[in-house]
Amino acid sequence: MPHYSDAIIVGGGPAGASCAIWLARLGLAPLLVEADERLGGLPNDNPFADDWIATLPGVTGQQVGANIARSVEAAGVEVRRGRRAVAVARTDAGFAVTVQKHAHIDTSAGGADGQREQDEPSEQGESGKQAGAAPGATETLYGRHLVIASGVRARNLAGAAPGDRWPGVLVGPGSGIVEQDFTGLSVAVLGGGDNGFENYAYVKGRGARTVHLYARGVRARPQLVDAVPAADLRVGSYRVDPAARQVDGHPYDLLLVLYGWEPQADFAAALELRRDERGYIHTDFATARASAAGVYAIGEVANRMHPCVVTSMADGVVAAKAIQAALER
Image (cartoon, rainbow, N blue to C red; front, side, top):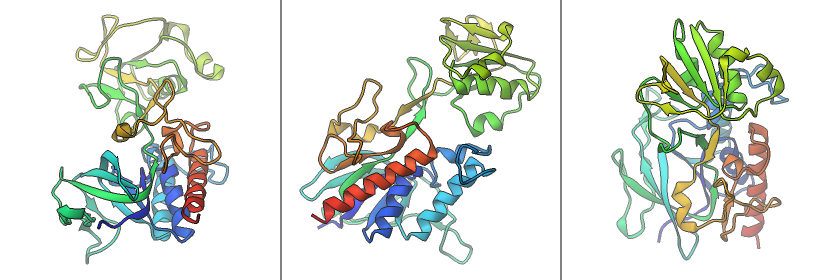
C-alpha cells in the first residue's frame, strides 16, 4: 500500500509554498513537488527590487525566492525538487502523480560538504521504491488531495511550442535579458504590454544601437507608452522569422519575445478540469477548489486574482484551510 501525503502540491512558487507551509503548521503532512532545483518560482528570475510588496522595500525578486525556500524548510515541509509532474491519475484514496526526475545537486542539507544528490525514494506500490533514480526516470507520488500551483510560462511565438528556442531570440522577461550585453546591437522587442515597453526602456538604456518595439495592440500603462519615441514604435500586424532574426524582413541582432504568459498544467489534462478560454483553471473563489473533487488550483495557473506574489500566497492559505476542513470532516 503506497504512502499518501495529505496533499501533493505541484509547484514551489509563492502559491504552492504558502499552501505547503500552512498545511504543515496546521499539523498536516503535505508533499511539495517542484520541477526546478530551487523553490521560489518566478521571483527567482527577477533580479530587481520588488517594491510592490508592502513589507519588503528594496528586496529583490531573487531574495523573495530565497526567503520562500527558507520558510518552507523552517516549516519542515517534505519537498521533492527537480521533479517535473508529467501525469496524474485518480486512485481509490486520492491521487497518483507521476513525476520525472531532473539531474541536479541539492546544496541545502546533508553531507560533510553540504551537498547531496536529491534522490529521496518514494513509495511505488507494487513497483517498489526507486531510490537513486537516474535523471529522466519517473516515480509516482501519492496524496489524498491535489493542489495545482504550477504557475505560468512565457508565451512563445505563434505556432511555436513553449520550449522552442532559436539563437538570438529571448522568450519572456527575466534574468536572460538582464545577463545579455546589448552594447551596439540592433534589437526588436515584440509585445504591446507593460513588459514590452519596460524592456524597451531597459535595452535602450544599456547601449543598444537601435531598438524597435513591435505591438499588434498597445495595452501598456500610458506613462510607459509615452516614453517610447514614435519612430521606434511599430503598431499593427507584423511577421516574424525567428531563425533569420527578422521582423517584416528587417534583420536584428536580437529578438525579445514578450507576449505575456500562459498557464502550465499540462500534466493534469486527464482530470478534464474546467478552464476558461485562455486555459486558466476555473476555481471556486472561496475555497480554490477546481471542478474535480479533491483538486485545488492556486496562484497564476488559476488566474484567481491580479497576479503577484502577495495574491498567490493568499491563494495558498485559502486552499490549505479548505483542505484542513475537508480532512477534519
